[in-house]
Length: 319
Image 1 (cartoon, rainbow, N blue to C red):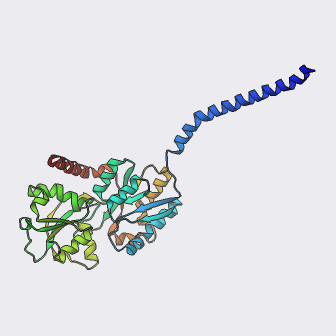
Image 2 (spheres, one colour):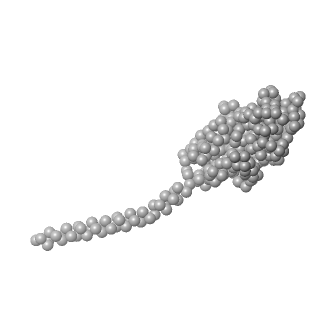
Image 3 (cartoon, one colour):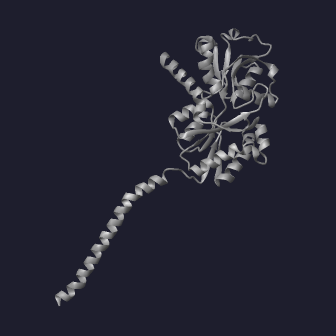
């Protein structure tokens, strides 16, 4: 009787043991495969929305309207909601990229080099090919220009000794890096030791207007940004003296984070690189004084890296 009672129990134990072994084996398999699956899953980011960041150069509402063809097209191609982020400095945009809050952005060349050195996943993919303007030449490059007010006593570089000069933003290539590295080589000393006072105005447009209105004696501005001021009727090319110009600098880089999934990156690229063939594109490109967008790579900004290296070496030597 006891044996008859024990047999089902033994069979039950064997079944439970077998089930446990199978379950344990399955868990072991999952344990080995899940990290691989997680790694594959984590290989790219697929957010529900993309944040597009720029530092405004116009009044905020106008800037939002200006970029609407871009944000609408990006939303359509990627299938994502596009959120606009407009901080007041390049540093804030870079911080947004590094913290993965910002996905796509427009940077200055110098700021791009800094961001890319901190995180190689911040990568350039395009820039403007500008039309010939008032001070701007045609192509995907621009220059830093040192300007003074026409009719003033500041008609040469030497005449600016002890004068008040305007820079734009610490993260600006033409409005800070070029003056501090290249122009300081022209005058043979740091700009603070040449000019009487160095001030930051906040933008190329504000620098340009400050010169014309006599609020600063001279300023370093980007040629295409000076054109913006002329086009708005706030200055004329004949209002200023051009006392110095740099060699060509690659235009502002449009960047994304390469940790986004490849299909998203491809659609972001398509948004810009094929924009000129789309309805409504002409108005946008006319607004930014460009013919089209052109593809750019990180090596196109090696000239900026060389300038940054020279600036850092100079600073280290001073310290």
